Image (cartoon, rainbow, N blue to C red):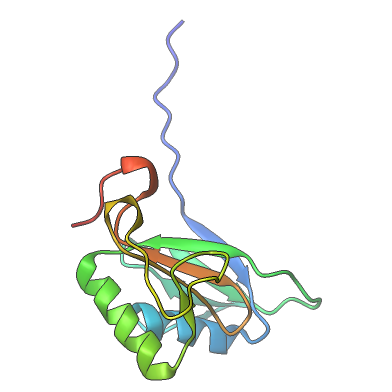
Length: 136
């Protein structure tokens, strides 16, 4: 029996934020995205360069921070690091936050962890885990 070709692609996710405007602006500025966040109904929408969407929303209850990792090229990584340092945002080389002020060189690339204003743990990396190809 032949199975139809499966085609599953990530389209969008909703990210809980204490202040959806502040979190959307922070993300857009730190990652150096060209388009400003925009109102989209209940959400503040941020479009990534591949067309995928992050919808920031302010929930009515508290929430635990989530982890979001983004594969970026070397130039984008350099820009992220410049903006983190310029804003005085604390960053770490590891998800356990044991190596503050450092980046890692795991998986043949560079990586950094930092928190957004809502307490989400963001990661920017230039090489994917387990030897997957990078964007460079």
